[in-house]
Image (cartoon, rainbow, N blue to C red; front, side, top):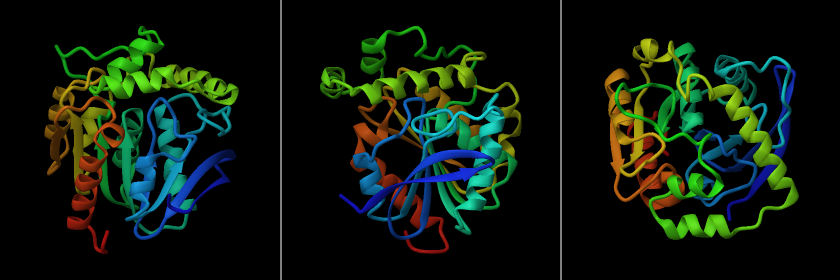
Length: 264
């Protein structure tokens, strides 16, 4: 595995955990509802091409839960300060699911430090007539099975026994997700009115069998973000970076290389 570290840093009065590894152009990966408290294979593969930062959002993982955390707008302003604090002039910003919604909230406010934007099965908008899967109503097994197209991957995840710390983190993450995304479910009524403000190169990656946010959400997002490109990944659920790792890495590296002032 690539050399990587876990560090603590304080931004806006909130201490968070940041995983970091690799070398090359800077990439910030914003995780989804499940968090990102340990170094994963997709992070390792990204670290072959980039200096990868994976912060745990305020309220998730081993990060603090600040008093000021009331909504996604708070997280967006936090990450604008985070991008200033890490000392990188430009970053490739990637967000998955709730983290994709967060990346959108950041980008509509300011893309000054964003070189490219990659949205992976992103939340944040509503498509009339296309119901989402409701992770708050599914039990643990349903949630895992509905996350993956490949049920062998789902079964392996279900069979794994979490540590006490992992169980505590999962509960913490679930509460923070509910606080951010309970009502309305996983979108902002204001956000999609302003997606036209995003002028940086944008790639939208979506699994063709996503049961949480069906591909129609990716198609709608592509129409709302000027000049964005949509790639549908076959035989893939909600987590392309885990389920279709080779396709994910190939898509992201080709996109950033084609839209970067430096090599990726």
